Every structure is written in structure tokens, then in C-alpha cells.
Length: 434
Image 1 (cartoon, rainbow, N blue to C red):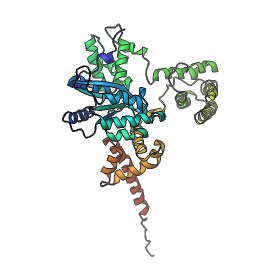
Image 2 (cartoon, rainbow, N blue to C red; image 1 turned 60 degrees about the vertical axis):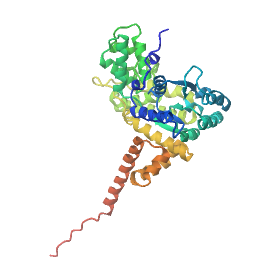
Image 3 (cartoon, rainbow, N blue to C red; image 1 turned 180 degrees about the vertical axis):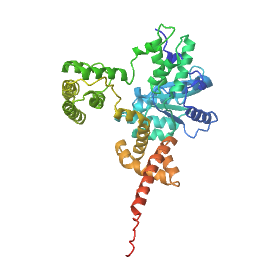
């Protein structure tokens, strides 16, 4: 079996780590504090999306600077006894294979946050207090309330999704080493498809490049497209032009989209594909009924109702359309989904802020986002005196502070404008006496 390229081309030195240079610098500074024997905190928590280099950075550092990296997957060692036996002993003694320096790497630390893992968390906390070697923990989402004690003991280092340019550059380097000719636009499409996940991009590249010396855009078709735009357009064509309910229903089989997402595509395209008012009214009536079923499914978890919702939104719409449109009518990307994609990063920032508030104030993330976030945002956007303490307490990043200042600063400006308009008195024009 050929070696996986994700391992073959894993960084051997810190300088080879792709992207997140500020995070890499923060990690190096923390390790330097260990080197001089004066770490402010004995553990570091590297967090962020999958495939952005968190684990690779630790392994590269160990290899370059002569550390033995002892890897432990936290989700496999959930109770206190096992955590002490594996991590505890490693944190107290030197390596057996000749290395004098050691790093304990605890991967998937957010995997010990369930109810059954309380013992594992308390054991890990005690190990951090007593450790004689650096402990590095890795997590995708570290904001679970049960991980709060570990966060307080750790230097928090955030990793973000990699840019399309950075991923494309790394893929090009791999192709050159493998002797594969690939146009830049093909590599760019692979990078875009990965959504900031370098590991995913490298795995996709290896999958399409197997046994080839050159790659073209056509070779990417075996992967499919992550957003499935081409497939959904084809499915819509079958739905709106189908002659039977069964034919329209079969159009969505194999689509890697949730039924509710397909529903949105059909709903937004119905007005351009069904031109007769009475036919469109019938189609909308069926779509409304399907929407009611979706609401019941979501609220009551009654998944058996899906057998009614899907035929209504596919076959029902196909049957409702009896008059073909005049000329070709192209399908369009739904406005709702376009907006979701446009503000995806903003939603992720807001969710991260809510998680941090929830963990500190012992609330659900929903309640923190709905009730507390506006107040905290107002304080940060209006008060320069208390802002540093609030930012430090909630461990907000510069990006999160910038978001709060932007959103809630604009809200207050609009309120002031409305207030000024209200207090303005209308000008009275006096009439001259005749």
C-alpha cells in the first residue's frame, strides 16, 4: 500500500508549517520559556479547525529540536486511572530511547468533555500542575464548560483555516516532488474545495493523481464538488421537467445535500421555472405543506414524516408545472444559501464569542449569545477603561474584539442618529399679517 502523502509530506521543520505564522510564533515563545526553565504556564492548548497544522507543528518542533514527542489521544483515555497511568508517568520521567527532552502531546482533548470524563479532566489538571515536561493539548473546539479548568492552566493558541493561496502553493510543491504536471487552476480548485483544510486537500490530490503523470480539471470530477452546485442544477432540471412524481423524486437520489437545502433550491427557482400564476400558486401550496412537515420533523424528531415532505417538494412541484416556460430559464443560486456562505466567517466568530461567554458564566451557548453577548459587545464598543479586563477575562481574540466593536459600535451610532432625528423640532413658518 503506498504511503499517505499527508504523512510523507508532513513538515520536518517548524519553518515548513503552512500558514498561521502568529500562532507558530506564540508556540515557539512558549517552548522557549520551557527551555530557560521559566514557563508561565506548563501547558499549551492549540485549537482550531481540522487540518490546519496544530499537530504537525508539535511533531516538527520535536524533530527539529531533539524532543521525544509522546502522543496520547485523549478520547481513548477518558477515566482518571488511565489518564494518570499514561500521561502522568510520561510527564515525570525522561524518554527511554535516549532523548533527554520530551513533549507530551494530548490530541483531541475536547474528546474528554462528556459526563463520564469528569475524572479524566481532573486527572489531567493535576498532571499539568505536577509535570516536569511541556504538555501540549490539541482541540477543535476547546470552549466546552467542562474544559474551563484546563483552559485556565494553559497558554491558548488559536489556529485558523488556511488561505487558498497557501494551500495551492503547498500542493504545487508536492506535485513537483512527485513529478506530476498540474496546471495552477486545477490546484486552485483543489484548494478551494478543501475549505481551508490542508490535510483534506493533500488527500484529494493523492486520490486523483494515483498512477498519473499529469492532471487536468476533468480528473477532479471523480471527487465531486463539495457544494454540489453542478449536481443540484442537474437535479432541478429533472424536477421541474419531470413527467411523473416518481421521476421527480428520483432526481435527488444520490445528492449529498440535506433535504431542507434541496427544498431551498426548489423554492427559490420555482418563480422563474413556473410562469403561469395558477400553476405557481399550486406549487407554492405544496412547498408550504412540505415546509410544515420539515418543521415537525425538526421539532419532534419524527423522521418518518420525510416520506411525505420529499414527494411534495419534488413530484408535487413537477406535476403543478404544466406549461413550459417561454425559452430557456437558467437556475440560480438561492439567496438564503448565498447569504449563509457570505456571512459564514462572521457566524463562526459570533459562535466562538458565545462559547467563551458561556464557559465563563456557566450558561448555555444559546443563552450567552442571545442575552449576554449584546451587553458585553456594548461595553467593549463604548468603554475604553473596562475593555481590557473584559477581553482578558473572556479570552477574546483581536478578531473577536474587532467584530464586537464593529457590530455594536454601528448599532449605537444608529441609535444616536435616530435620537437626534426625534429631538429635532420642526421649523415653524410664521405667516405675515395682512
